[in-house]
Image (cartoon, rainbow, N blue to C red):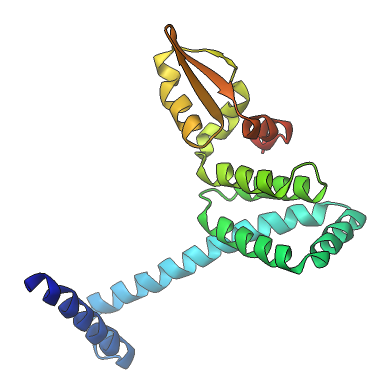
Length: 195
């Protein structure tokens, strides 16, 4: 019974504080006003970071020749459901990526999809890798070899790459053999590691 009351009390306190802040009663207290201002700044910073990522993507779009841009928009116009799906997906992706330079990588994947170099499934999978890969590991993807590897210094990196589906691990008596996945091969083919 005690456990059931706690959430109700928490909600009541939150509602009361919200009402007091909106009415201005608590805003007059310096500490509360500072905390409220910091909350507003965090939202503003988050919005600015999202804007920067979208802007990088649009800048890349602006670089491609007008003929290719028209082709891209015509393709999206032919499939309204796909256009909406991709638009929403890209906005969510921009919000989740941790580095604004990843927006350039997303653009390269988008362009490869538009040029029919990759299909929608690969478009989705590559963008998931871009979202999940650590920015400091991007330049190391090309160094993945299809070979036996027992260096302990690389095990954390290889485990990370396995977790985001860039490599597949095959165990044998001598240790592990690391193989590039198809996603990794396309990642390298599109030079996503050279951003």
